[in-house]
Image 1 (tube, rainbow, N blue to C red):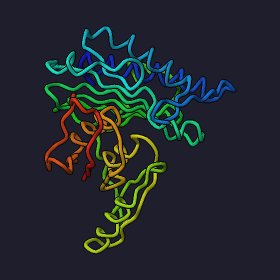
Image 2 (cartoon, helix red, strand yellow):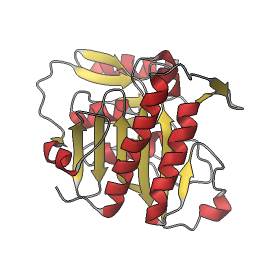
Image 3 (tube, rainbow, N blue to C red):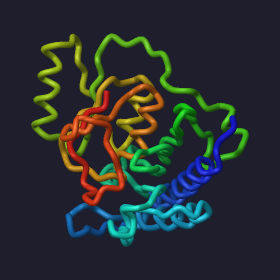
Length: 263
């Protein structure tokens, strides 16, 4: 499998960061701080952010990360390329120790994600995609990655015989609007099944073919969705901004996403 240089850099960065996240996850060094918006922050967030930023420097492309100093809009508004990173997506799931947390890395070009990597360190599952390349799933045998591992990557979606219409929902951010959306679906589809799961793994279940729809009406940021959007898109799904009724765009002045539906 021939990967672009930027995709290789992003994959290797995610796996390296994931290894450090796992070290903290399985240790007693579990200090939790809280940011100004009351969202949790751990040492894993900080170390992962540092590892990823150092790795992505090789690309000479500016980085927008959830952690650290966020690039101001005046400095990034005219950028043609931008890395958008969530060094630890699903920090609440990390703290709960339910394994449903990820590293998200996306490359955005002219406001659209063109490359995405989602790595779930505790599950040792890697998802990656690039525009016109397709989406892939790779189950790692260890917390490291070798060039031979890529030969085992599975192209997504996988053909799955399902007898239900799967709707992925958040474990930690479920709103009444989401419940209403599901109830409306039940009026037009048979056997609608809710699938609760944390972090950007929701996108991954869609890309796999395990689920069919992801409605999101609770707040989230650009770094929560950019990698998942391109992984889903290359697997045949669309992420539609419910305010603009078009594909969600990135590197906006306001980094807070509108409500969206992926299907």
